Image: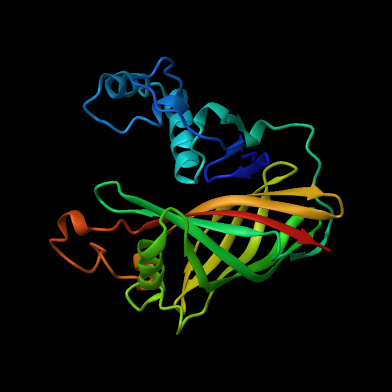
Length: 270
């Protein structure tokens, strides 16, 4: 399967450029670069010990954390991941001023969560509508409206897939029958370079609104724009209680982490 090369910002100031492919598991690492070390999960392995030693270097640690985030965002073939500082990127063209309407047919959102023992699930949610405003070369506002009833799981199949999707839409989690929309409202965006913005905004889930800032890439695509990025939100702040240690004690291996990782890939048209 061929995958289209994509560019996006995944928190921090890391510009990740990747093509996804199949990962081949090896008995041990042969190269100890940051992205290879990010794949090591066995804390008792010699590879982990070597990587831990290398991570004492601050530059290496920064790259390691960016690679970890890339993996959590669904990029599993780390041999294809390269990192460049968005702050130092040059020869980049900025998107023109205008009000860009999100093309819901070509835009996507992905989610990822895990429990305390490292079991992960991921999936997708459709964008219902949205827009991004650019004025004077800066993001001046906008919003992304998410259709919570379209929440799907992509790592399971059959009854397991149906079960987790139903549970996530239930009152235990996001209660999509009652709260069918989640909204990310962009208040402003400070330009770091031609395409990289520190964005100030507010996220509303289950009728609860919290401040949530992130880093977005807004790059020109003909007369339109591509918007990429990632952010992490704490579900407990939006009264999503199931398996949360913010509400329940003694959960043991049933504890589900409060952090939900979101990756956005949006296209906008004037």
